[in-house]
Image 1 (tube, rainbow, N blue to C red):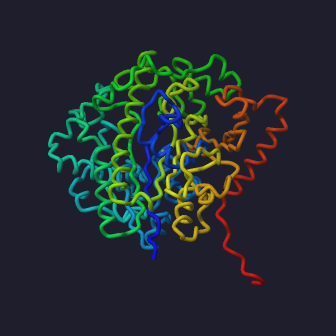
Image 2 (cartoon, helix red, strand yellow):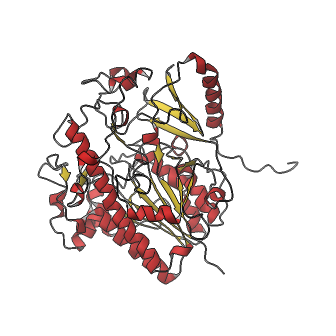
Image 3 (tube, rainbow, N blue to C red):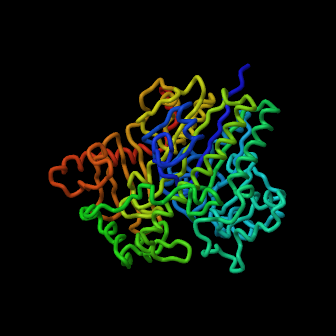
Length: 512
C-alpha cells in the first residue's frame, strides 16, 4: 500500500511578494529559486488578513478571521477550533510545528489563558516538559521573538543553552529587560545561534525521525524573518549595498483621491484621533516619516535605503536555511513523496505609497504574498500561474491531496486541481479582512482577476483599483463618475462573496 503524501509547509513572516530572486534580480534567493524551477509559482496569492495571528490561524483552520475568532493581534485562537493537524492526525499522520506559532497573545487572562504569554513564555522548566499537543500539532518546538525582542524563551532558548550559548540573554535581554533599541542593522548574535539555524536543525531532526519510522507527516517550518526589527548577523547585514537597490517611495498626488487617513500618513505629526488612534500604533495608522527604528523616531533617506538592504539580507539568510531543509529531504529520499509549500503570512511596506511595515492599507504590497508549490511529477515544474490563491485554502487543499474529506466547516477552497495542473482556477476572487480594534479601523477587500474594492465600516469612502491598467494602485476610482456602474457591480460582488463565506451546509437527505 502506497504511503500517503507528506506535507512540508515552509513560511516566512511579513515577506513582500516581490522578494524572490527568480523574479527580482536585486535579491539573491538560490533555494527559493530552486523551488520556482521545480514547482509552480502562484503570482496571485493573498492573505486573509495582513497581520500575523489572524492569517496564521486561517492557515490551520481553513476559515477566515471573522469566523475562527482570532481576528487581530491580541486575540486568541480558541483551542476548540478544529485544525488541519487534527484531521491529518486522525488519519495517521505525524504533525509538528517548529518556529513561530502566534496563535495566542502575549497577555494571558483568566478568561483566555495563553501558553505564548508571560510568565509561561520564559518559564524554561515548563518548556522542557511541553512539546504538545498544540492546535493539532502533536509535537511543537516554539519561540516568539523577532530578532532581539525580549520575548525570547520557550524551546529556542533551551536549544541555545544546549548548544553551549550560556550568554544568550546578552543578545535579547539588556539590563532594561526590553528590546535593546541601540542595536540597529547588525545583530551581534553569531549565526550558529540564530533562530534560522535552530529551525532548520530541528526540522531536519524531525524529518530524519519520520523517515526512520516510515510515517506520513505534516511538518511546518515557521521562520520569523524578515519581520522587523531589521537585524541580521554579519555578514548578512552588509550583503546588499543600499545605493544599488531600488527604494520605493510615494508618488506625488497619489493620495489625493484616497480616504483621508492615507494623506495623513505623509504629514509630520498627523492627528488620527478621529479614528480613536494615537498615530503611533504599528498595526494602525501612523506617520511614515516618524516610523520608529532603534532610538530614532524619524527616518532619513539613508535609513530607508539601509532598512531595505537589511530586509533583503534577512531574506537571503533565511533562504540559506530553507536550502538546508530541502537538501535534507533529498538526502533522506523524501522529496518525491513530499508536497512542499513555501509562502508567508502577509506582505510588507518598505516605502511603497509612502508607507512602512504594515497596517490598515490593503495595497497589493501588504496583502499579496509569495507562494510556491512543489510536488515532483504531480505539480507542474517551472510554471507560473495567475490562479487566485488564499492562505485560507491551504488546509482544505492539504486534506484533499492526502485523500481526506474536506469538512463542511472549512470555508477555504480546495485548490488541489489547480496545483496539479488539471484546472485553470478554483476561485474567482479573494477576500481580505482587517480590524485592529472595534473602531473605524475595520475594512474588507474583495479582489478579482482585474479589480479590487475596499470598503470601510461605517464610512462612505473606499477604494477601487483597476489592477490591469493601474498595477501600482495610484488612481483610486471610488468617486469617479465614469466608474459608478463598476462600483455598484463590485459592491454587489463583494456582498455575495461575504455571504458565501458561510460554512457549507450539511448535505440534504433526499425526501427527508
